[in-house]
Length: 411
Image 1 (tube, rainbow, N blue to C red):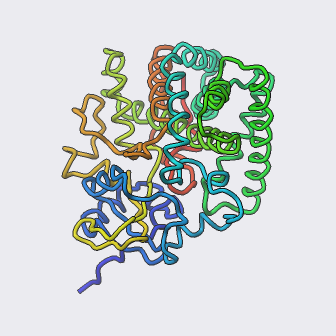
Image 2: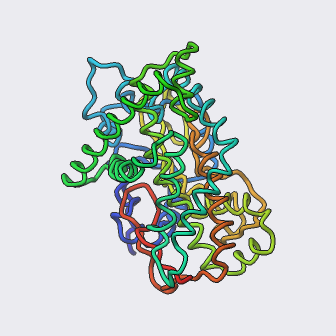
């Protein structure tokens, strides 16, 4: 009689595990079926993979996000607090991604107000940015779509929203790319050095730009935020700088991967691409299906604020929970034929952007960029195809994210 396979640790649920990197659902389907709530001794977290449990957790506004509130055994969270300085305000060391109320709501509300107002009228600018990227691809018989299209569009979009001068755009792109290593808990010393250099440059840029916009406002998000400060918003310059940086880093990487994953899926599924070509109005639902089927982000987390139960399993106050957004989005109890990519699927809400008070603040911008980019790409290059359709994609090794290093296409 053979012993059952051991349950995967948190590290096994990252691209550092080659099986997971090739196909996460080979691991996640088994985990969700065998033990949808289990305590991982390596990370000190409960790992949760069933849609109903995941959705309830991310929607629960009583749960905590700040890793400082996790018990000592929650090693994954404690690692995130190694550089915490108790002599400084928490809000000058953490963005809204890991803050709890009342600070979370105090900072997020004015930022969301200003950002969403800009996104609501941003489509023409996104169309301009995408059009320039497509113009730069003209005449190339083959190219890496990640480098030429998927990476620059989100960076240029957020740069435009922030009001980055055109002559500093190349610097801003480099800083944005370097800072992404802040999302990698297993980064090398070399990657850490790149990250620290880029982060310092971004911090200096935002400090000087906030001061400049206070003297002479422009039509950009930083000016909007400075204006809200002047009107009484309880928001310091430190808090503004750290949250603008978080918006930049998180939004660039995830939107890049959303666009890249969408293109690959459409090229692998020509019948689904034909539906888009026949009816551009399905683009919104198409992007939601990409978010469900191949989301850019694997996980999010919460900390129990009181004793509770998850899927019949007791969780004590202070214990940490990591929820698998990827596993939840293909739960067969919720989605019919969950491993089928169907751009006209009748949607039940996915959890790719999390939920509740901490739902991704950049979600409306990411959706807009993906919708515009995909329609314009296939309008300009209707015969686009994968250069190596039978090869395993070059999936990036950044833990807890799903995107490609390269996407070679023929135009």
